[in-house]
Image (cartoon, rainbow, N blue to C red; front, side, top):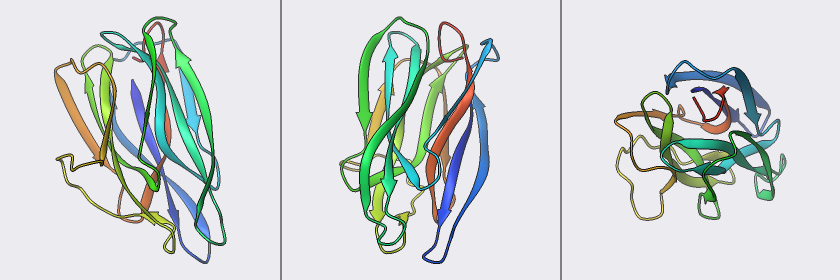
Length: 174
Protein backbone atom coordinates (compact mmCIF):
# COMPACT_ATOMS: atom_id res chain seq x y z
CA UNK A 1 0.00 0.00 0.00
CA UNK A 2 0.92 3.73 -0.45
CA UNK A 3 -0.83 5.39 2.43
CA UNK A 4 0.27 8.99 2.28
CA UNK A 5 2.00 11.46 0.04
CA UNK A 6 3.62 14.19 2.12
CA UNK A 7 3.64 17.66 0.62
CA UNK A 8 5.57 20.85 1.34
CA UNK A 9 4.46 24.48 1.15
CA UNK A 10 7.26 26.95 0.57
CA UNK A 11 7.21 30.73 0.70
CA UNK A 12 10.02 33.22 0.46
CA UNK A 13 9.66 33.99 4.17
CA UNK A 14 9.57 30.47 5.63
CA UNK A 15 9.20 26.80 4.90
CA UNK A 16 6.33 25.03 6.65
CA UNK A 17 5.59 21.35 6.13
CA UNK A 18 2.08 19.92 6.33
CA UNK A 19 1.20 16.30 5.66
CA UNK A 20 -1.82 15.46 3.53
CA UNK A 21 -3.22 11.95 3.42
CA UNK A 22 -4.07 10.38 0.10
CA UNK A 23 -6.43 7.45 -0.28
CA UNK A 24 -4.75 4.13 0.56
CA UNK A 25 -3.59 2.52 -2.67
CA UNK A 26 -3.29 -1.27 -2.93
CA UNK A 27 -4.15 -3.95 -0.42
CA UNK A 28 -3.95 -4.04 3.34
CA UNK A 29 -1.08 -6.54 3.56
CA UNK A 30 2.57 -6.08 4.23
CA UNK A 31 4.23 -6.60 7.58
CA UNK A 32 6.80 -3.83 7.21
CA UNK A 33 6.10 -0.10 7.29
CA UNK A 34 8.10 2.35 5.21
CA UNK A 35 8.67 6.09 5.32
CA UNK A 36 10.47 7.38 2.23
CA UNK A 37 10.86 11.10 2.94
CA UNK A 38 12.97 13.70 1.11
CA UNK A 39 13.31 15.66 4.34
CA UNK A 40 13.44 19.37 4.98
CA UNK A 41 14.53 21.54 2.08
CA UNK A 42 14.12 18.87 -0.63
CA UNK A 43 11.41 17.80 -3.06
CA UNK A 44 10.45 14.58 -4.88
CA UNK A 45 11.39 14.41 -8.56
CA UNK A 46 11.03 10.69 -9.31
CA UNK A 47 11.31 7.06 -8.25
CA UNK A 48 13.61 4.08 -8.37
CA UNK A 49 11.77 0.78 -8.41
CA UNK A 50 11.68 -2.90 -9.29
CA UNK A 51 8.64 -4.35 -11.01
CA UNK A 52 7.17 -7.26 -12.90
CA UNK A 53 3.40 -7.71 -12.67
CA UNK A 54 3.46 -5.81 -9.38
CA UNK A 55 5.61 -3.13 -7.85
CA UNK A 56 8.24 -5.24 -6.05
CA UNK A 57 10.29 -2.39 -4.54
CA UNK A 58 10.02 1.40 -4.36
CA UNK A 59 12.38 4.28 -3.59
CA UNK A 60 12.21 8.00 -4.28
CA UNK A 61 14.50 10.47 -6.01
CA UNK A 62 14.79 13.79 -4.18
CA UNK A 63 16.34 17.10 -5.16
CA UNK A 64 17.55 19.81 -2.79
CA UNK A 65 16.02 23.30 -3.02
CA UNK A 66 18.26 26.30 -2.29
CA UNK A 67 16.39 28.05 0.55
CA UNK A 68 17.46 31.52 -0.63
CA UNK A 69 17.22 31.31 -4.42
CA UNK A 70 14.74 28.44 -4.94
CA UNK A 71 17.07 26.80 -7.49
CA UNK A 72 17.10 23.01 -7.60
CA UNK A 73 20.42 21.44 -6.58
CA UNK A 74 21.88 17.99 -5.89
CA UNK A 75 19.83 14.80 -6.20
CA UNK A 76 19.75 11.88 -3.76
CA UNK A 77 17.60 8.79 -3.18
CA UNK A 78 15.68 7.28 -0.26
CA UNK A 79 15.10 3.54 -0.32
CA UNK A 80 14.25 1.33 -2.03
CA UNK A 81 12.06 -0.82 0.21
CA UNK A 82 10.21 -4.00 -0.72
CA UNK A 83 11.00 -7.33 -2.30
CA UNK A 84 13.92 -8.50 -4.40
CA UNK A 85 12.07 -9.54 -7.58
CA UNK A 86 11.35 -7.54 -10.69
CA UNK A 87 13.51 -5.48 -13.00
CA UNK A 88 15.24 -2.36 -11.62
CA UNK A 89 14.25 0.90 -13.31
CA UNK A 90 14.18 4.65 -12.79
CA UNK A 91 11.39 7.13 -13.51
CA UNK A 92 12.24 10.83 -13.17
CA UNK A 93 10.57 14.13 -13.96
CA UNK A 94 12.38 16.17 -16.62
CA UNK A 95 15.00 18.62 -15.32
CA UNK A 96 13.34 21.68 -13.79
CA UNK A 97 10.14 19.81 -12.88
CA UNK A 98 8.83 18.29 -9.63
CA UNK A 99 6.19 15.72 -8.59
CA UNK A 100 2.88 17.56 -8.15
CA UNK A 101 0.55 14.56 -8.30
CA UNK A 102 0.33 10.81 -8.72
CA UNK A 103 -1.89 8.18 -10.31
CA UNK A 104 -1.67 4.61 -8.96
CA UNK A 105 -2.88 1.34 -10.53
CA UNK A 106 -3.60 -1.30 -7.93
CA UNK A 107 -5.54 -4.33 -6.82
CA UNK A 108 -4.34 -6.53 -3.96
CA UNK A 109 -0.88 -5.00 -4.51
CA UNK A 110 0.32 -1.81 -6.16
CA UNK A 111 0.96 -2.56 -9.86
CA UNK A 112 2.45 0.81 -10.79
CA UNK A 113 1.44 4.32 -11.66
CA UNK A 114 2.71 7.62 -12.85
CA UNK A 115 3.87 10.98 -11.58
CA UNK A 116 2.32 14.22 -12.75
CA UNK A 117 5.39 16.41 -13.20
CA UNK A 118 5.04 20.18 -13.27
CA UNK A 119 7.48 23.02 -13.88
CA UNK A 120 9.34 24.16 -10.75
CA UNK A 121 8.77 27.90 -10.27
CA UNK A 122 12.11 28.98 -8.79
CA UNK A 123 11.05 32.44 -7.54
CA UNK A 124 7.91 31.03 -5.83
CA UNK A 125 9.68 27.84 -4.62
CA UNK A 126 6.75 25.71 -5.75
CA UNK A 127 5.52 23.75 -8.78
CA UNK A 128 3.14 25.21 -11.34
CA UNK A 129 -0.29 24.10 -10.09
CA UNK A 130 -2.49 21.86 -12.22
CA UNK A 131 -5.05 19.08 -11.78
CA UNK A 132 -5.01 18.03 -15.44
CA UNK A 133 -5.74 14.30 -15.57
CA UNK A 134 -4.18 13.95 -19.02
CA UNK A 135 -0.48 13.74 -19.65
CA UNK A 136 0.79 16.54 -21.81
CA UNK A 137 4.14 16.20 -23.56
CA UNK A 138 6.81 15.66 -20.91
CA UNK A 139 4.51 15.98 -17.86
CA UNK A 140 4.01 12.33 -16.85
CA UNK A 141 6.47 9.63 -15.88
CA UNK A 142 5.28 6.04 -15.42
CA UNK A 143 6.61 3.54 -12.90
CA UNK A 144 5.94 -0.16 -12.37
CA UNK A 145 3.61 -2.35 -14.40
CA UNK A 146 1.02 -0.89 -16.76
CA UNK A 147 -1.46 -3.57 -15.64
CA UNK A 148 -3.88 -3.34 -12.73
CA UNK A 149 -7.51 -2.47 -12.56
CA UNK A 150 -8.09 0.28 -10.03
CA UNK A 151 -6.74 3.75 -10.79
CA UNK A 152 -6.66 6.52 -8.19
CA UNK A 153 -5.24 10.03 -8.65
CA UNK A 154 -4.05 12.58 -6.13
CA UNK A 155 -2.82 16.13 -6.71
CA UNK A 156 -0.91 18.15 -4.17
CA UNK A 157 -2.84 21.30 -3.20
CA UNK A 158 -1.84 24.57 -4.86
CA UNK A 159 1.60 25.70 -3.66
CA UNK A 160 2.55 22.17 -2.55
CA UNK A 161 4.94 19.57 -3.94
CA UNK A 162 5.44 15.83 -3.35
CA UNK A 163 7.92 15.02 -0.56
CA UNK A 164 7.40 11.43 0.66
CA UNK A 165 5.64 8.07 0.41
CA UNK A 166 4.55 6.10 3.46
CA UNK A 167 2.98 2.64 3.44
CA UNK A 168 3.51 -1.08 3.93
CA UNK A 169 5.40 -3.76 2.06
CA UNK A 170 6.25 -7.45 2.13
CA UNK A 171 7.37 -9.26 -1.02
CA UNK A 172 5.67 -6.43 -2.93
CA UNK A 173 4.55 -2.86 -2.25
CA UNK A 174 1.20 -3.73 -0.67
